[in-house]
Length: 82
Image 1: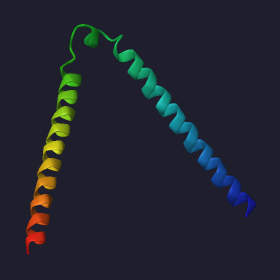
Image 2 (image 1 turned 180 degrees about the vertical axis):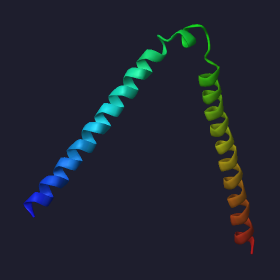
Image 3 (image 1 turned 90 degrees about the vertical axis):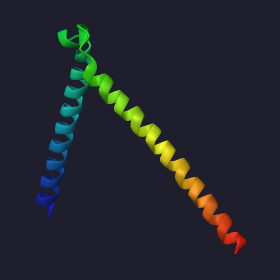
Image 4 (image 1 turned 30 degrees about the vertical axis):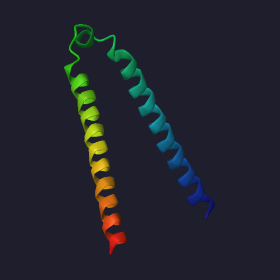
């Protein structure tokens, strides 16, 4: 039983160290984006498109939420009148 527990702990530690390494690498690459030549030359269309897409999704979700609230209000009024 002890051997199994130690193997499980060892696998967990390996997984955690791998995750830490991956997050460190992502953080480092994110810091280097602004230093890269493509980004410095104004090639920001990819990132701007991503931002615009997220904004569009947020606006769409808000409109949909308003529509659902209005629909529920009407449904509630109809039920109360019956």
